Amino acid sequence: MQERRFPSTDHPARDWRATLLLAVAVLTIVAAGVVPPIAQPPHLMLYADDRAWLGVPNAGNVLSNLPFVVLGLLGLLRSVAASDRGPVRELIDAYRVFCIGAIGVAVGSCLYHLSPTNDTLVWDRLPMAVSFMSLLAIVIGHHIDARLARKLMPVLIAAGIASVAYWAMTESMGRGDLRPYLLVQFLPLVLIPMILVLYRSNLGTRRALWWALAAYVVAKLFEVLDPELYAWTGFVSGHTLKHLVAAAGMAMILSPLWTHATPQRSRPL
Image 1 (cartoon, rainbow, N blue to C red):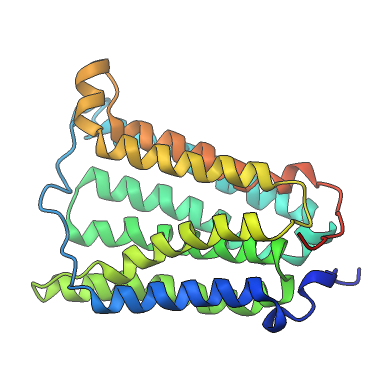
Image 2: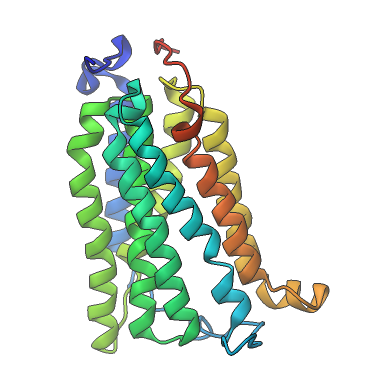
């Protein structure tokens, strides 16, 4: 099947929307470079729910990662059937990396919550960085240009991995700096809504991506309210709920693998 190209983005460099996105990305990166180093919060590894269950310490925060494994495995299996379907086929590698990242998130988070240390936190953050970067590639591919997304994906993934490596190195030297890792999380949250507003999609899944972004915001809110939610409910903490809501958002992102939405020609806004 010949790769789809869209009239509004055949020449991204001449498109004011692409110029705006590039300017925002560059300015955000520059801003991250000039602000002082950001240290890891001292209370990061203190969680409200530390109950054990069936010999599993911190069971709520550990076992709530299981949906990521299920979604990642189902997504990989479904990607085999979706690999010959229009726009999904064009970005199938990005979807597969995202699914592998989902499984990695579950494994890394389980290892971390079983024994919260800086060493295990590396394996928690690494797959999350990969997932964020592959998601950005997926959104670029479906809304702007699939070939551009495939070219950018290795660079984005490398940047995500490097951000975690940089934090781990600086942390080991006693001057931990989270700026690159926070940039990997923050920049997609800026660019993806802009892309959704500025460009039409070649799949009917923009609503699903908005729901995924909303789920991320709610998940971060639950993370901040970890002890308050545990005190209020008496049985589930905010961090456990964070995992479950984030998994729901991930399901929204992977929905094209199931829906195989009918390709639609993209039109300029």
